[in-house]
Image 1 (cartoon, helix red, strand yellow):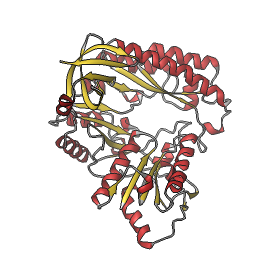
Image 2 (tube, helix red, strand yellow):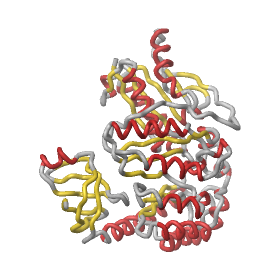
Image 3 (tube, one colour):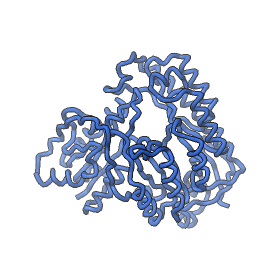
Image 4 (cartoon, one colour):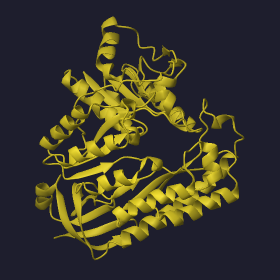
Length: 435
């Protein structure tokens, strides 16, 4: 039987889709890129915003429309939070996703009619959750692998539903993490991205602090074959001088850090229930930059949060200049029912979209300046794809890189990290020659 899988949402969701793919393959199923020819269509859903929830439901209905004879399986965060009927035959939330094959096969054995309607019961939020282990997971990407080490969040920001969908912080067993990293290295992966829902809380459920994360990263850095380590999104107030010092000693760690900001206005941050103000954020940035002077610094910002004034948005723009971000992932605020922010006075929809455009333009200019700064310098590129005499990949700072080479050279270098000389930049990318 053939299985089609689709992912919506974050990197953790992508990892869990890859894990589900592995589980189906190990059980004898064939993976297909075509939902029309699949016997089972799986949608890994997202519910982080009202818009994400809407898209998840839309994709489930689309699967049933494209292939009425297929079993439609909904898994992930939207499934966890859904109340009443979901447009799927099998529904798995965030707590039972590791049993996706068993539950799908149970449905098939019972030979139920394909109604594409299944009922769910919204779960109670537990105060402690266990980590649900998938085992080793191979990324179909073939060059860069994502590794999930933590699930859940304890923060309860006013705009966010994730603590309800994912539950409380649950840390993966450290030895299982290292076993997966060793397996990935043996399979030829040279770069791993360490991710989680609230990665800086790794170990917190076991009574540990940020040192637990630095210990795991250090151990991954000692694995032969792993040449690059990237860290997923980090919360600024978790960064201590000791942690940053530990990071600086990991030679394989990429100087690319993503610190979650959401707003550069102190008053908006307070309404969001974030645990820092702009000055505290800058203090953490300066600590990181002293240890990694050439680092790339990226962030997330929400535009049009309830009550955001023109002046508060201007504060965010000025703060972006002050922090020196190299890229901003910009999102218009999307109301999510069930959050505190949903009860606040909302702005007209066009306001958030207009501000998103302004900040996105700022981000594009920042990316262009950062790329231009590499001209004439040497760097390295993970060689990933190839087209028309140009190989493509990313350098340690996660700048998209184009490298001129012939097909034979690409076949030898694909999946490896090659030294290059940057000859110029184009838009937000760098142009390179092999050294």
